[in-house]
Every structure is written in structure tokens, then in C-alpha cells.
Length: 185
Image (cartoon, rainbow, N blue to C red; front, side):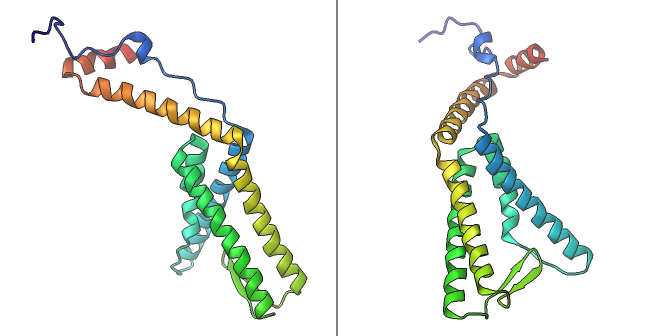
């Protein structure tokens, strides 16, 4: 088979090369992503504080920061991880309530390096656990809403289209890459 095209590694056509507009981020995704970033950032500050005071600590909650950044960028994998964090929050709330009901006054909790003991009035402790569960339920609801799902789907399609365009350019010859680089800028 004879190829009549003198340069089979041409960069994509101009209409293929334009950057697609990013879908509008819903406020609910912005809110949940910002909360995840805020908590992850606070944990990083706490870890650094402990490090400066010659204590070595590590909290897995620090992983909420990349999840929050991914949510703000519209990454589907971050939505999955955020849902997993919400389920973890439900479970921890349930465990706190169960422990307080089974062993009143003996529950000890450490939040950001501050110890919360079960010596607090029982209704206050149960209220905090229920509010924590309600917060995670609200975040889960906001991420599972139709607007959020549509945003993540559009963002995923946009990333797939841009990824295939980038792969086509990368497969080309060095000359095609240089021409593409000059054209962009």
C-alpha cells in the first residue's frame, strides 16, 4: 500500500488543536472541594507544628487535600475518593455513638492534636457525633446530585478529547512537534 501523504505525522488540524472550554463548576462542587482542601491544609499545618516541636506525627486526613484539589479540577477519581471519605465519616460517627452508648464517659477522641474526652456532657458528645454524620451526609448528597454528576461527566469527556489530541501530536515526528510548538507559541 502506497501512502500519498508526504508527511504522515502532520499535527492535527487547527479546529482540532483548539483548547476546549472548561465546563462551569457548580457551587456545590466548589464548596465540597474547598472543605476537603481546608481540612487537608489544616492537617498539614498540624503535622508541621508537631514537627517543629520535635514530635513526629502523621494523619491520613492529610490525603483530603489532593482529593479536594481533584474535586476542584473535576476529576472523577477524586469524586470517588471523596465519597469514600464520606462513608468513612459515617462509620466513625456510628462508632462514636455506639461507644458512648455502651461505655458512657469513657470515650476519648483526639482531633487536630487536642484530646476530647468523654467527660463532656453526654448530650453534647452525641450531638457532635450526629452533626459530624450530618455534615458528611450533606457533602455526599452534594457530590451525588445531578449537577455534580453532569459536571464530572463533561469534565471527563473534555479530558478524554484533549488527551487524544495530545497523543496524536506526540506520535508525530520531531519536525511535526516543532511546528506544533512554534504554532502555539
